[in-house]
Image 1 (tube, rainbow, N blue to C red):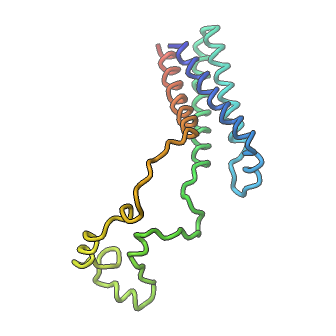
Image 2: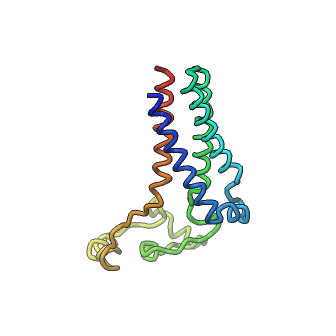
Image 3: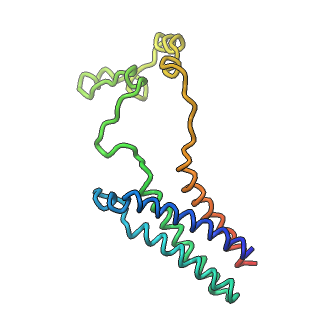
Length: 188
């Protein structure tokens, strides 16, 4: 179990090193520094440094068998995983638009004409449904007769898998597996 945790840790660190190298090679550090509210480089490098430190402490545990080293490595790994989650959270483009930025209307938005916020519109909305408009039989009949927006715009293209997503996903699952294996190996 100890060796499985070590191998899992090695694979996870290798995937992380690949991502860090790719990020640096593509100018990620320069881009994040230039962007207001960008990802702090300290976060990325702390995450990477702690992952390698934890691996070294785990290696020392494997060589010596001292239980305190195993728990220290697990503690370092917990901080590393927390920083990794922070990195993913800050990198994930959600919400997709910036605050205050208007999104482009979809075909569904064009159909549901938004009633402006005026005193006349407020009195017109009184007595209507919870969303500010009333659903009529004509609306339902038109909805059932018209094809869906997907059918109107032609055939649906198949979704292509982006292999670039697999590396961070495997890195995250590797971190979870490593943590579970390390804790089980230490408890045993």
